[in-house]
Image (cartoon, rainbow, N blue to C red; front, side, top):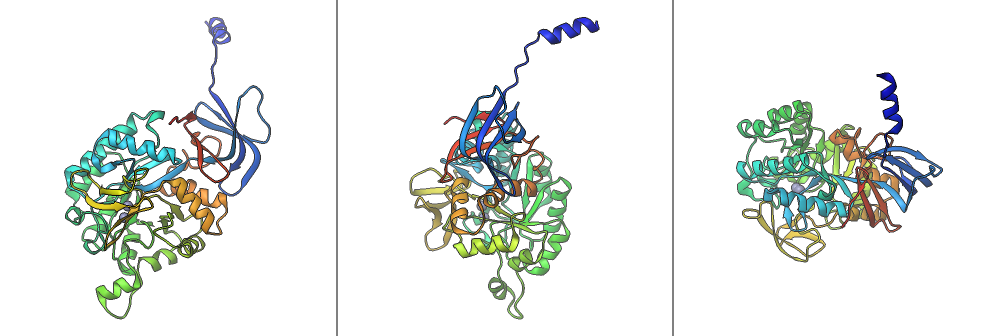
Length: 406
Ligand SMILES: [Zn+2]
Ligand SMILES: [Zn+2]
């Protein structure tokens, strides 16, 4: 018995799918020039300074971890709220071409039925993922509909409401939501945060006109993140309008004062000026600031008029090819991928390249609780790898060690 098993082992052909990348490796805290990243069976095996024997070498300028996007609505004509698996795949493929290998499709405001269709479509694509589908879904960002009425921004105001347990408990139990947003001042916000925290979600406050006191209550219920800093959130001035004097501290002060609070910036060059990007980086640091795209369906499409959210009922906005906007109202999310956000942040702040890339990979992975699996070039993690050119454009994308072709 023992002997025959040995002979079978000796005769069997072991085919191990090995990959080796060579270039300047971008690690979370530094870059390693002239180094090799060895991957095996879809996982990172080692970072070494000499080429391993017998493995073909894939040359790149920069070898970077794949990007992770916590806040993104769609791309290439599709919005995740369109509610079909095909729309989800269209958007995921588009973002993968821009370097995003792990994605959190993000809801807008909408009806219970529209939200349910979105969650089902994302779960189906996540559960049946293959390389050609592009960015891998780590979970849904349940973002709308629990927004403050005076901070809905470009979302359809008809689709916003206060949190209702009859709606959200059923959604949270579908096993696909990993990030959960609610405006902290709404009736029922604390119960929503606690229910989402029980299921392991990153809790975030967004589209909110909350005071410091309301933020402190949300913090006690587990809230630790604020969506797109400076966009659709309270300020000292907005609270003065809400409450008069004495003036009150806002979400901005709360995020800057609390070490544990993280946030995100849309570094597309249209939403925030360079000094605000630098300020956010200086104040929160690389471990608490994430880059997000907040991209909508107009990513990779020509200038024109598009719907934000569901294709039948979403609100209209325009894209000029640089940013989304509603004439006379303001900006309506971005039309750029994560590669653009990384380039803009690198060119316009003092953050080093490893710091910028950390904010687009390991930091969002840590905040969303997936850093053991992906987010950096470290042994044991998924081989989600980008080859970047000197100008930080995306040359090649690898998902679990498989090259994405486009
Ligand atoms: Zn928003
Ligand atoms: Zn958004």
